Length: 71
Image 1 (cartoon, rainbow, N blue to C red):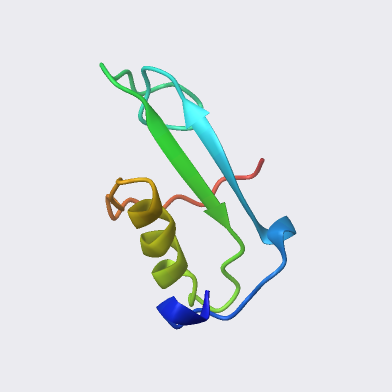
Image 2: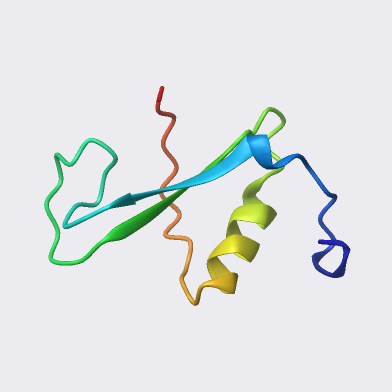
């Protein structure tokens, strides 16, 4: 994604999870809508621009909520 100033990385370091009627990955926080979680490898704390770019691509927004979750 050079147009966004982001270097290309392997797909194996990013994926999505959808939680239905929940805000968190473990469905402990009920919600009336759904949440898409973006999982990225973030070794150096440099992936936040990528998360914002991904959210923009689907008309979403980054909520600012960061969780470290073993999956």
